[in-house]
Length: 119
View (cartoon, rainbow, N blue to C red):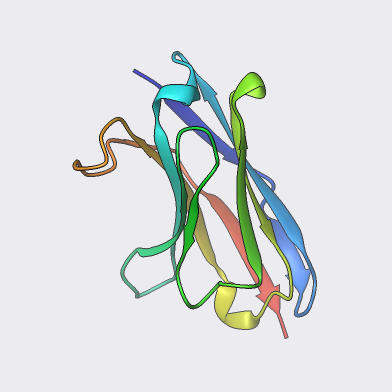
């Protein structure tokens, strides 16, 4: 099975940018559909963006559309989330996830990376 490790979180001022990375090991990510989620304190986990096997198609939640960009580099076994125009409400723990099938739940999750946006 694949292991996922997020990195790149930190503290940033509102309007700033961060790039999160999700490094995979154990299996090539080229066989996994992947996504980013986040969970803010006291809130449910929220889907942010997903990307197909080759990276040719992406999907975004309305809350981040136009501000966040998901991408993947299968050769580096890594997925990314470029975040710009960050807002205080983007403060959360960000998780990457992977699944084999389009029709299954996300099976593999990273441990999360904290993003704090100060206004």
